[in-house]
Length: 431
Ligand SMILES: NC(=O)c1ccc[n+]([C@@H]2O[C@H](COP(=O)([O-])OP(=O)(O)OC[C@H]3O[C@@H](n4cnc5c(N)ncnc54)[C@H](OP(=O)(O)O)[C@@H]3O)[C@@H](O)[C@H]2O)c1
Image (cartoon, rainbow, N blue to C red; front, side, top):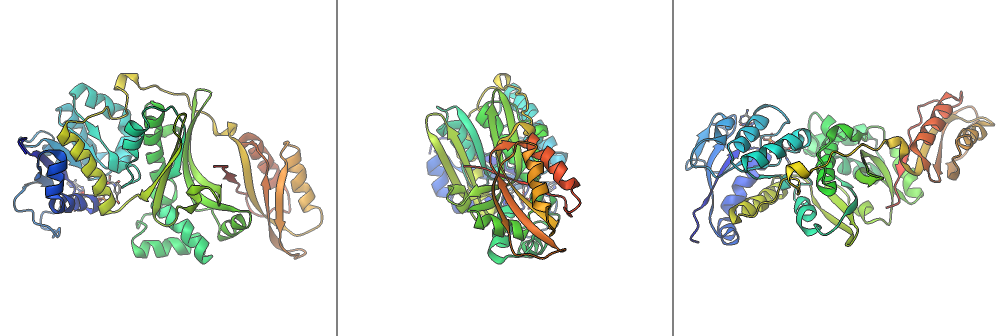
C-alpha cells in the first residue's frame, strides 16, 4: 500500500455512525486491500461527548461543531450521518461541497429536498457527493442504476422502500390484527420510531423514490411532485380479502415516464401473490428496475439498521479511495432535465374497493350503477352472509379504468345513503 490513507471524518455517531465506526475497525485489513490504501477514521462529531459509544474514540479528533469538519485540515472526506433536511446536516454538506471536499451521506431527506442544488454545488466545487446508504440501506441500488444498468433506458422503477411499513403490513397479515395495535408493538420492538409519521405516512419512502426517479430518468430530484399516501387506512380486512383474491398489500413507491411526463407515487398497492415483490416480507426492502435491454431486475435486502447502512457507506468510501467518482445523479448537473409531472388522474389500472354498507335490497345495484355510469366494469365481488339492516363489508375489484373515472365513481358511491364509511380504493398493480 503505497498511497496515503483516506482520512475520514464522521459527523454523527448514532445508529449509522456507530455502525460505520465499527465496520472501519472490524474490516480494517480487508478495506485497505480493496481500497489500495488504508481507510482511517481521524475525526468525529456528535452532540454528547461523554456518551459511551461502545468503541474507543481517544485516537480521533472530537468536534463539537460538525460544520467545522467541512474545512478543518487533515480530512479527505466528510461522512454526514446526522440526518434531517435542514440544520447542521445541510450546513455541513453545503460547506464541505463548496470547499471542494467530498461528502458521503446517508441522509435521504436532505438529498430528496436539496438534491438538485447540492448536485450543482458538488459540480461547481469539483467534489463528490455519494449517498449509497440513503436509499434502501444495504441494497446497492445507486450503484445498480448508475453503473450496472447504465446501458439501459429505464422504463419504470418501483419498490418496497420502507421496512417499517413492510413489517407492519406483514405482521397485520400474519396475525390478523389492526394497524394501530401492530404499530404499537413495532414501536416497542424498536422497528418503528416514537413518532412514526415519517414512515407510516409514506414520507420516508417518497424521499427515496424521488432520488431513484432522478437517477433512473436523468432528471432533477422533484420531491414536490411525488403523490404520497401512507398505510394508516389499510384494514386487517383489506389484507385478508386481498389474499382471497390472490393479491397482497404492499406500500409501493413507483416512478415511470409516460409520454415524456414523470409519474411518481407512494401508496398502498395490491400486487399479485406470484409477483416476486409480493414475497418480500417483514423489514426487508426491494427495488425493481425495468430496463429496455436488461428486462426486469430486482434487488432485495435490508433497508435499514447499523450493519446494512454501514455496508453501503463503506462502498462509497472505497470508491472514493480508489478515485472512482461519478456525478451524483449520473449526468452532469447541467444535463439533468426538469420533467413535467404526470397527473395521477391519468393512471390506468384496476382497483380494489371495500365498502361498508347497510345490508338492504338495491344497495349493490346502486353501487354497480355508479361504476357503470363512469364506464367502469366490475371484475369480482365478495359479500359474505346476510345481515339485513346491519352494516356489512362488500368488496369488489374492477377491470382497468382511469384514476379520474374511479374518483368520480367514488364520489357518487360515497353519496349513497346506504354507504356508511368513506370508500378507500387500493390500486391494483399487475407487476
Ligand atoms: N437508522 C437507519 O437504519 C438508517 C438507514 C438509512 C439511512 N439512515 C439515515 O442516516 C442518518 C442518521 O441516522 P441514524 O439512525 O444513525 O440517526 P441517530 O441514531 O439519531 O444518530 C444521529 C447522530 O447525529 C448526532 N447529532 C445530532 N445533532 C447533532 C448536532 N447538532 N451536532 C453534532 N452531532 C449531532 C447525534 O449525536 P448524539 O449521539 O450525541 O446524540 C447522533 O450521534 C439519517 O439521515 C437517516 O435518515 C438511517
